[in-house]
Length: 197
Image (cartoon, rainbow, N blue to C red; front, side):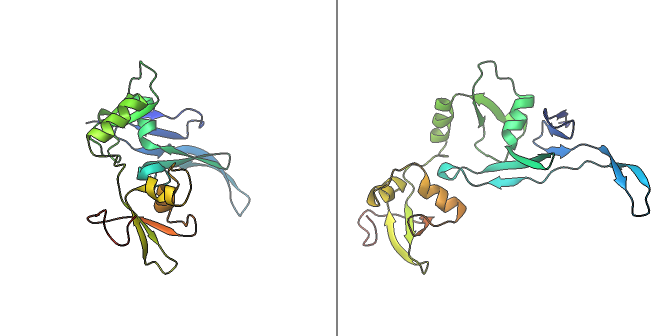
């Protein structure tokens, strides 16, 4: 498949996104002031931008993001949304972009589609991409297992807090929450375990 590039609006022709899921800086001419006093009009070659994992979202959703800069300020964009905006039709004005194959790193335009929030959640659940019953481990200050919970909701109920993704965010960002570190439980969870709730 041939790679097609389209300029990203709002960045003075500095960046482009491709149908294959890449984002690049474009070639541009800049005025360069030399130490000897000369002023040069230099061509700066564009390059493919590095993609970073966006780990800060609720329920562990991970996707690629890129930073675009203008006038010293950088704004981060999810790559799949950029590709969908420039290469996928959205006649119903849906707000969510779905990865048809369930792989959040496959950002080729043929793998993306605009859908409703409801349909996106149904797709994720039907394909095992969203698990509401993922067990959670609470670690003490030494990093040892303190308690295991059936899911994030149970952990939040035990601590008297609203279950709105705060534990998942703490896990994804490797930060403390309510004085503890948290991890997703790996292995078989049994309701009757001594350390579980």
